[in-house]
Amino acid sequence: MMLHAYRVLAIVPFLMFVVASSGDRSSNFQNCVSACYGDQCHPWTTHSLALRLTRWTCTDDCKYKCMHMLTDSAIWGSSTIHQYYGKWPFWRLFGMQEPASVAFSLWNMYYHIQGWRQLRSRIPSDHPMRPFYLTWAIVSVNAWFWSAVFHTRDLPNTEKLDYFSAALVIMYALYFTVLRTFNQYPTRTRDGNHTQRTPAFLLWSFICTAAYIAHVTYLSVLPRFDYTYNMAFNLAVGFTHNLLWLLYPLPASLPLIQRFPYKPRTYRPSYASKVAVFAALTTAATALELFDFPPWGRIIDAHALWHLSTAPIAKFWYEFLIQDALDDGWRESKR
Image (cartoon, rainbow, N blue to C red; front, side, top):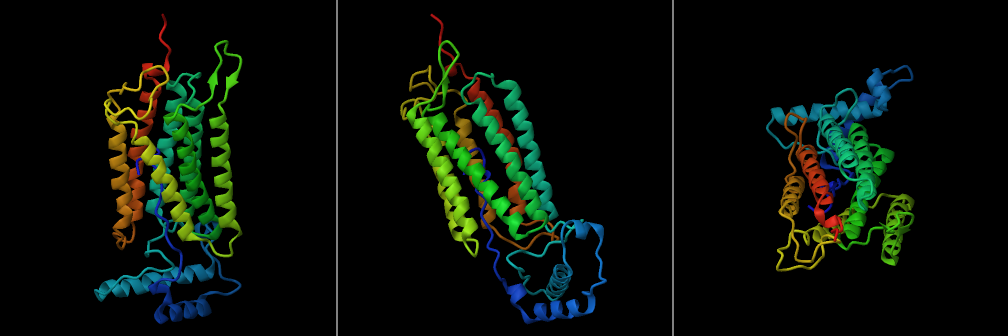
């Protein structure tokens, strides 16, 4: 999913359906939880500070213990390992439900913070795309922060904050991609005193803003989160974003777009193939989501590996954005 910069990266994460699974539907699990609740959940029951900070209730703790007890039995008996409430059984750490995904989410966030710093220091302050790239970096940092929170504790509110933040990354990536691809970004007048915004820029800004607000509103007012629609929305936006960026590395003999305002359509920079490489890398990373398997050591699953793989891809994309922004094609030749 090359398209936006990596989406996400995460940019289009394959969403997990938090519905009843074979594990939590089993009578053994339900009986275990009932027995645990009766034995351990009393008004005077207390948990460790880490569990209290991450909002584990006594019932949640019983579900966690029963899940691992039944998983232990499945492993010893060489039988099928089941999912519970749409998730594989993971060992928690300091209250974190999926510590590997938390760590890798924070690693992604770090690369976006570094990317923001690089954009700010290396791209000229008067570059027309600079504010859009910086905003996208901030939006991405926010998304990976909420990804870490969500993988720490999967709760209704943390789930929505994660999904809505991820959708914002993808939508904003499409937004600035259209501006960059078709040269519709605001520009300064020759005297430098005014900013010119085309009707196309204003219309596109309105469409993206309205689409995102409608997306969040629709998912917020429903009595049950619509996972199918959410996935379809992200995939559609992400696919469009990637498709647009694939116009960039086309050969000079097929000039469908003018890459730079002060270069002819046939001008193709030497680094243009990096976009195709990025597309291949993001597609390969996203494919990890298709190979779902029980977590290794109850720590790392396919989703965690996807988070692990997107961090270096993000670094690669920031390097491309900076290289593209510094191209001579942005500067009007002096005669």
